[in-house]
Image 1 (cartoon, rainbow, N blue to C red):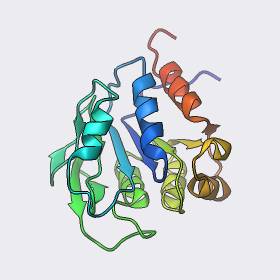
Image 2 (image 1 turned 90 degrees about the vertical axis):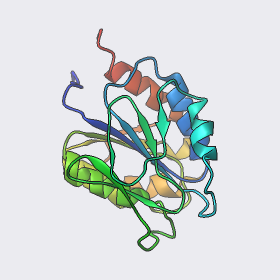
Image 3 (image 1 turned 45 degrees about the horizontal axis):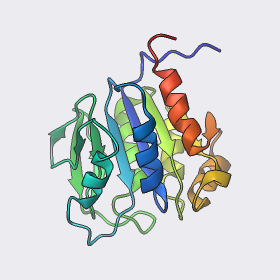
Image 4 (image 1 turned 90 degrees about the horizontal axis):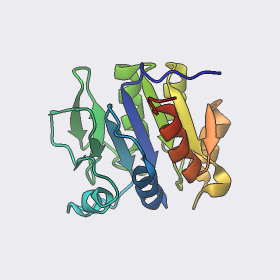
Length: 196
């Protein structure tokens, strides 16, 4: 089957326990400059108010890594990371908003909140990626991405630091690709290689 990549407008990545290392490795392994934005929701300590995570991720990529402010416009070839203790929401005008609404699956930022809002806006133009994690946050969100026609990728449970999150997603939804962390990077490289 020949995959086409020209329709996709955003890559979403969600994860929890163990996912920072995986995200860093994926970004470091990319051999192309994405022409679309990457929006990331990782579970963080609510007291983590510094730019520490953004700085750690920035060491892994030449793409600008941004903790967005309220109303920030989504731009291509940038990585947006949900701030601590704020839900990150994609709005219909393709800006990002922040919310202090209640925790979802004991988490704020919530992966489900990010994925669900993005699925409403980008519909079938999403590549959604769910990484290692300790609760079920993200499973329903990636289900909605799938139901809207987006492409879904889940880290293989055997490759996860904690696989509760990925197992929940696989049980809830028929996932397009179940891959190790290294395979996720290779998939993206092959999928977006303009020379193929």
